[in-house]
Image (cartoon, rainbow, N blue to C red; front, side, top):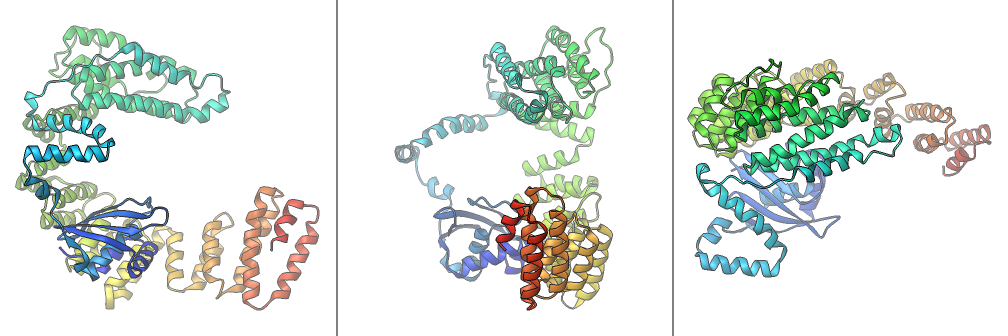
Length: 574
C-alpha cells in the first residue's frame, strides 16, 4: 500500500490540490481513523461544519475515495486531498480501529438485537431502512431455486390512470409551450418504467409485464398528439424494448398467453413503426419465439435487433443466478466482457484472465475488467491487462488516466509516462501535460515536441492556450487568441486575464474590440458584458501608466452614446 504526493496530484486538478494542501497545512483535518487499508476522517467545510471522508487504499494507491461535499468537477475534492496529505505526512495521527465485521463478529445474536434496538431508539428513521434491508439480505442468502417468486397483484387500471394523467399533463398548453415541456413528461413516464424494473429485480415478471404493456399501449395510442421533433418520446419507446422483452421471457407465458399478448401489442407497434420508431419489433419476436423458441403459428417474420433479445436473456439468467447457462450463452454470443466479469465475481480468476487475454479488443473493456480485478485484490493482473489495453482499439483516455497514477505509485515511472501519454493523445489537457512534464525529467524536451504535435493535430486550441500560458509564452497565446475570432470570447478572456501585466497594449486592443462589438448590437442585455471588457481595458491602461488615455476614451464613449441610458448606467460604474 503506497501513495505519494506526486500520484495524488495526478488524481486531482491543480486548483483542488492547491486548496487541499492549504487545508492540510491549516490542520483542517480531524477525527482521523484507519481500518486496515481504509482511511476515515473529517475536514472543516465551507457550507457545512465538516465533511466526512473515506479513502480506500491498496497496493496501487487510492482505490476509491468519497466525500460528503458536493464537489463534482473532476478529480478528487480538496477535502480528500487534505486527508491523504495528512496520512502521507502524519500517519501516526490515524487511530487504528477494527472494521465493522471484526467489531460485531464477537457479539452473539442477543447482543446484536439489543445493540440494534438501542440504535433504532436513538435514530427512529433507521427502522424504515431495516424494514427494506432485512428482506433483501434474507433473499440474497437463499439459493436462487429456494426463493419464492413474488406474485403481487398489480392493478392495470391504476397504472392506466396514472399514465393517462401524465399524458394529459400537457393539455391546455400552446404547441410551442408543450414542446418545451416534453422532457418533463418523458421523465415521469421513465419513472413508471423504472418501477417495472423494480418488479423484475424482485423476480415478479407478471407485475412488470402489466406495467410495461400498459405503458406501451397507452403512450403508443397517444403518440400522434405530441410534437416529438427532438425524439424524446421516440427515445422512451426505444428504451422500453429491453425491459419488456425481459418481462415477456421471464413470465413463463403459455403459448395462448403469448398469442393473446401478441395480438394486443402488434397494432400499436405497427402504428409506431409508421412514425419511424422501428426498435419495437423485437417485442413481437420475443412473443413469437418465447424462451424455448416454440414459434407461434401463422406469424410473419419480423426484422428485429437480435442483440436486444440476447441481452434480455443474459440479464434474466444473471438475475436468476443460472450461472452455467449464463456463462455458456456469453461465450456463444461473444459477450466476453460479461463472461470475464462473472468469472471474477465467482473467484475464477485464471479462467477470467485466460479469456480476457485472448478476446479483448477494446480499451474500454480492458479498463472495466482491470478495475474488477483490482477490486478483487488482484492488482498485478489488473496492471498487466490495463497495459495491454493501451494497445487496443477505441478511446484510451480513461484507461490511461486510471493506469498512470497506479504505475506511478508502484514506482514504474516509464510505464506511468506511457499511460499518461496515451491518455493525453486521446484527450489532451493541461493537467496531463503538467504531469508528464513533472515525470519525464531530462527527457522533457523530446516528449514536449511529441505532445505539442498532438495538440496541433487535435485542434484543441483551448488546451494549447493553457499550455502556452502555463509556460509564460505570452505572444504564442496571443497569436491563437487573435486567430480565434470574436465569437470565442471565453478563450480571448482567458488570454486577456493572464497576459494583462505583461502585454497591456494587446489587452487594450482586444478588450476594446470585444466591448465595442457588443455595444454595436444596440441591445441593453449586452451592456453589462461590454462594461466587463471595458473594465479589463481600464486595468491595462492603468497598469501601463496611461490613466489619462483611459479617461479620454471613456469620456468619448459617454458622449457618443449619450442617448442610451442603460449603457450610460454601466459606464458610470467604471
